[in-house]
Length: 189
Image (cartoon, rainbow, N blue to C red; front, side, top):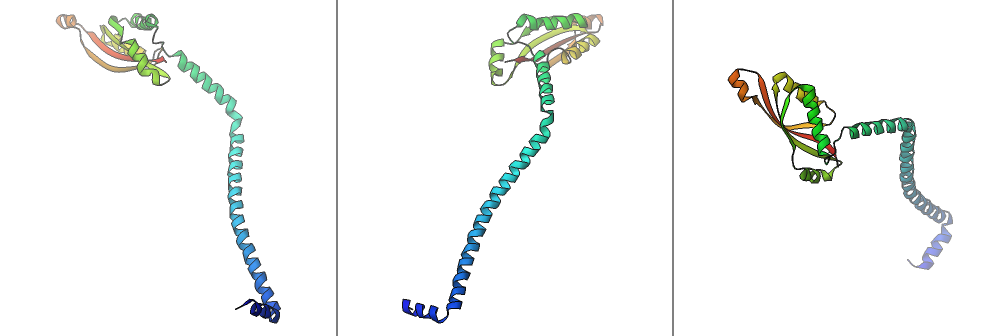
């Protein structure tokens, strides 16, 4: 087909040719509209999700001040129960206070190398401070010492422990118990 044949065909059938041209234009418009519609639908979905998130934030934001105050109080409570790894005298005084309250006798209390403790805990917010505590006393009093240690002023974790009857108590038939503990107190970094 050449250009003259197409021209004569258009003159011969003007309505049909116009209908085909209109159909092609409408088809192109529909294809373009569908492509634009999917893009607009994606934008709408993103905007709707953002709107829902903002609505949820506004709904749940009413108690933020109260929750912040509760968190501040909890942080202050935790901070008050932490030991300072470098305050050796104050930390040892804690064990002597427990000794006086429970009636046991501390045989040996000393920190495990403080320099290693501070380096090991430098990664996080808290530093474990290890102590070796050896004590002697009646069985009930040693258990009382453990309970007070567990529920005491500082956060405490018992790493290891040995318990037995004192040598002098075995000979006399008495009831003194000897306990050796490795303890970690939670300290500030």
